[in-house]
Picture 1 (cartoon, helix red, strand yellow):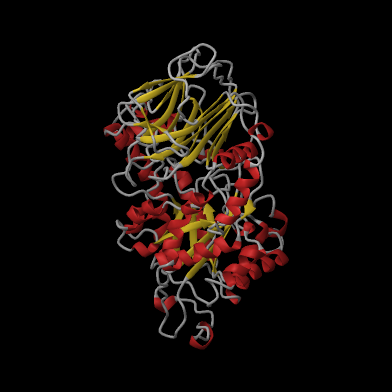
Picture 2: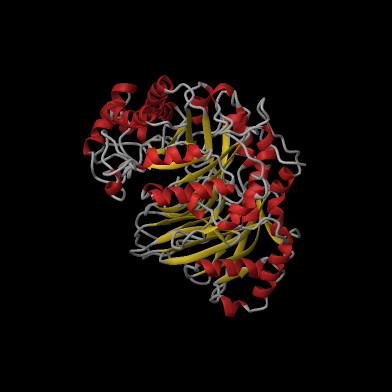
Length: 640
């Protein structure tokens, strides 16, 4: 987990009134007052320029049609085998620019195929290309939305997200080269993905921009757009985040439509609430808050303050990070302490105090380990050149033993209620000499030959998948067996992005659904922090689980425009609706949120006075091991 994951806006049917005011405010100013003049702004009206003409933007329709079902009138319909070419009046340069367009997918909800909306060849010596596409580099990228600025420069950003079918969405892609080069993706004016690294953009386009085709790339596979396209904007500069928002509100003519994105939430809230109670009348519901910071370990006063707020909001499961790849937040004979809390650990045990105080307040503690993440250069016997960046080498048995020992030691020494495993994945494919040797011994195949075919569904990819899976599973299984021997009822959870069968998993060794179905773990937390969750994927995964109640979605409680700006808390009303949605939609009796330090007073009040008004105890343990923390029928169920 990390706050660098994609996030978006913070409104839930607060209604069209606020949206309408914003739209009217922006539309009252002219485009020139808000943004620099675009190279192109095409609404596909009757006067659009067809054919290539000197000193003007020219369109050629390669089978594509203009249809009367656009946002303002006509739109461009791009079906399989059709495309449109745009020859801009000025060169498109890799040094910086912006492409924005409204897309109305014509494919069916849940379809797994890839769809390319824009492609363009660069006039550089490497034959690189630009692409804006739903899916790319299949199979790993089949479920991601991509903006590829330059494949040869490895400048691209993406997000595991699909455009909603039969809904107009404004997609904006921004890029800039140089020492602080970056690319960014926006849906409806809000940042969803960003990537930054230096890259050289001293070249320009070779040929036209192709809409509805990937033919301008060296990865052409006949990916059709299968969509309507309208209001295409092209800028020769990288628009700021604020200007992307302004462009959206300039073009949003139907603010009520923006509110319809919350229909899924309103439908869930209309369902009856299903609550479970113990034989003594205590409500059974795990209410989980994740805390990735280490402030809880800095002092007793900070521990007490955090637990008081957790309790005030109505949470009963606190998941504090105790290892983030830079040392422990508690005393350990196995690993050194994190430097930020080393002075306190020298005099007392922050974790022991946390557990004692939490249990006194009726809160379970599930320490959180970022298993494979590495944040320093110590323990060099666990990685080397070729190990994925920021990771330990999962293919080294000595690392696997070390991390299992570290986590099992906490189970043995502390009265913990559970252990949470994050970054329980390879974080990439290790290419070091030792990894290559290990792969060839395990698979009987040449590493580099299979590595070259890793994005192709076939035997080579299957061998790489088995190799990665086996190493990560060894950590999960080794820890699970030791932890359950020490404490049979300890709850073992993992954080992930599970996929239903038939959809290729990333080659990172994480197979949450198999671990859950085989009983190695107890809970899978799905990290879905966007405003609109991927409910279709979650339901598909639930159908494949022996106990679907053990799949728990983590909602985000904060927004972020981009990585260069601070995160801000979401509205308390929205957070309360997320919790109420989970209580009604799923019978799992669990609600989870990320992140504690974005939980403000508004959110605390909205939860405590709404979906968390009735006290509850965690619901994952067997009945004979549930900590009721003194709650009884007389104290658990509210009057009326």
